[in-house]
Length: 106
Length: 386
Image (cartoon, rainbow over all chains, first blue to last red; front, side, top):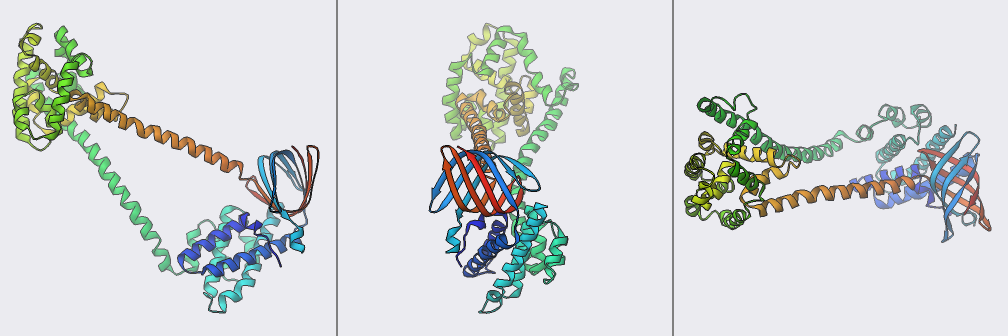
């Protein structure tokens, strides 16, 4: 199963990465095992998003920058409005990084 | 709702990861179950610190299988505690001790420096007070009513005011404007003074000696001798009229103003022999001449001797604050960038299309971190105007 390392940049991924870094530096964890944990996180996170999350969001805003490189879209929005069932959020500047979903299904 | 569900999803992800990597930790010569629990506790505690995982309730429910679950809620706020909980105390001890030692070492170092500077000031004040007391006995107690540090300094100028021409010369000399040739002499002398090798020459030129005393702290006897010379010159000033002073000896005048600045009266001159008194002179000059800039104060006394030193000192003093300001500006900018890029959406795209300047995209399986909240979505539609 292919996985994206994309979600490692999320809060949960960063927390895991920091923890693994500390444990590897302490010598309590081998780098190889730390990488295995990260790969498992990629799988688990992707699976959880597919199976547990059902919410829908709409995003509107001024597109300041767009970029498509290596099958990754990057958008930088200004004055973006995020809406979901529960609430809406205004953000002055937000970056969206999106990988091609077809790469996972292949 | 979104936050709570996000928290629950995160907890489930952590649990799933822990379950699926357990074999690697326990078997195949892995580090063992304890390390895995430590990993989970650190991870969860970081998540709680970040606010991505909500309180102990959901955690306890999710973490029931692991004993760390109930305990971690207790230690929610502090990462070290969780580490301490799972890891042996010895490991906790090691990190703190190095942290403490570096902290302590810098503190004493700074403390010594600060204390060194501070005590000198106060010590100078009491010493000046003693000197002032002696002066007060002889002079009718001018210094006594005033503050100890200002009083000795205040005393020198009133006499200077009495002689108008001399006063002007002094003020300018103190400011370094009028007696530029004198200052030039000072420069040459200062260079010689810095070497400290020519104590005899300095002794011969009594006026310069006190300044040299400032540079050369070692010889107390030299200071006393110089002080005596200073006293003589001072007496000449008091007795001699305006015209006589410049006419008699330019050297004496030049020498005199320097001596007069620090020590107007004979008693003050007598007090000068003490190193503390010399320090007082510095402090006084600093207060008077350079009230706006504190760093210039120490430089001010040598400044009377040689302006070059003063200029150098001023430059040195000016540079650090400028650099600091620059750093602050850069830091602010960096922080602003961080804040700008802090909002992040991580997702997969199904389709991205554009019609003229209107972009539409459909995303799925995304993690959004917006306004310090983590929001997950299964699908997202975006409409952007470029």
